[in-house]
Length: 125
Image (cartoon, rainbow, N blue to C red; front, top):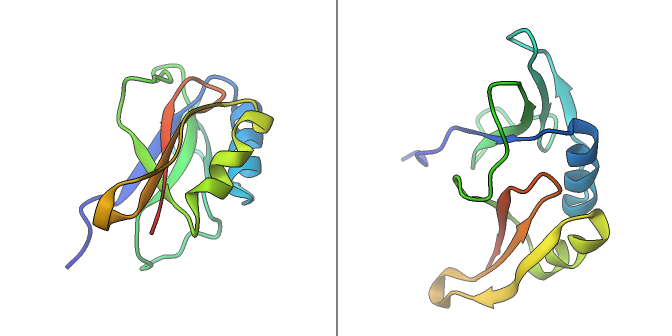
C-alpha cells in the first residue's frame, strides 16, 4: 500500500533566503529542478529524489500566482530526532513555534515558521 501524498510544494517569495533556511535546518542540499512553466523556480528536497522511495518528494516553489502562508497545509519533515532540526530554526532565520513535543505512540513533533511565513513541522519516533 502506498502513502497518499506523492508530492508537496512549499511556496516562497525569496527563493535564495528560503533555500538557505531549509538547507541549514535540514542539513541537506536542495537541487534546482528544470522549470515546467514560465516564471516558476523550483528547488527539490533531498536530491537526488529517490524514485520509488518511501515518503513524498517535494520542492520549494517560487511563482507569481502562489504565495507563502502560515495557515495552509502543514508539511512534516521526517527526522531521526526532531529536536535537532528544531534547534537550527532560529539561527536559520525562522521562528520555533513548539519545541520537541511527545505525541504518544506516534513519536514526537516540533513546529516552526520558515523565513517565508510558512508553518512546517518535524517528526521523529
